[in-house]
Length: 396
Image 1 (tube, rainbow, N blue to C red):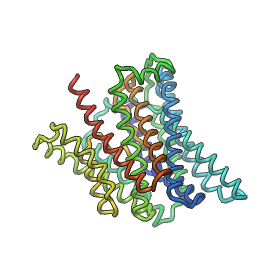
Image 2: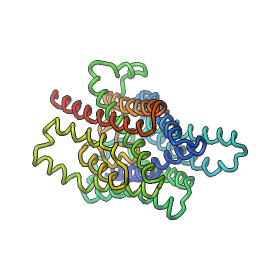
Image 3: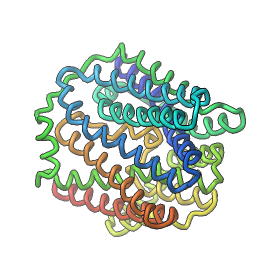
Image 4: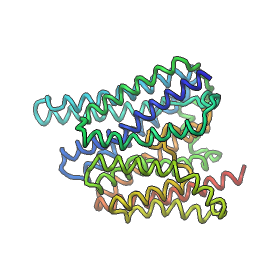
């Protein structure tokens, strides 16, 4: 019971820190690239390629991380969270000290090293962080307390956006405060017993298993979910940021509002859908999740953003409020095994693929075409993910 409460406290602090700062950190990086290049398209492409670098580092480290679980999960959790805290704190310190670096060339190298280090550190964190959900399940949590926690996480973007604009909070201070809160989240881990997982595959064998016939459906489904993850975590917020005139406050309010819609409306929508028996119709489910992404091409103002987000969140059962906290539930609340690791790598590959496709299309055509292509690909991936899940379920 004490271990479960400690884990929930750790997760709450970490999720709130990521929800408050992760998206804004990438927006700060985008703005830096824009100041350097003077071109929005180039700035977005550089940001996405840097995000792809982070996911690549996570891909390369994940088999090693899974192998090291035999020496204890707690050690990896601590190292991963510490890496994330250092990443945010150092990036914030770099933004604060950047103005004292003399000369445009030296300043460029200074920021480039800091931003690249941030991406690499987040990738390492992503690979090391595994959640011992079997401990969390032992703690009795009322629906009211669970709902209150999700509300806190959902409100963080609006809270931070307001602080940045209305109260003049510096981007450097936001990043450093978030790093500090991540460090605080390590304290409850003292009361969590260690867990050991026996991962049997070696480094090369893990990647070889990705193309194994027995895992193709699992990997394919994970890649499609990863494509949606990048579209949801980075590309869509960047599009909103441009639509609302580069306003952090309005962006935060919109994101928080749609997350609240997800929390409040989804249960009612699910019940209504079950009564109409639409959830049992595969073509209808595919049409809903695909159109929710493809329809974003027509979004042009805050009202249409709210409608598009509400439609996506209430129609796709795979999306949770945790997506604003850097997808901390990537292992779907399951114990760590070979299939979990394969799925994790598939998710990362999907994110990398969409970033590369976006950069390629943006380099050949306009930024609008690149955003449209990303949403169409995400829509196709969403439909294929539903089909893959249905096929997997029917074979069990």
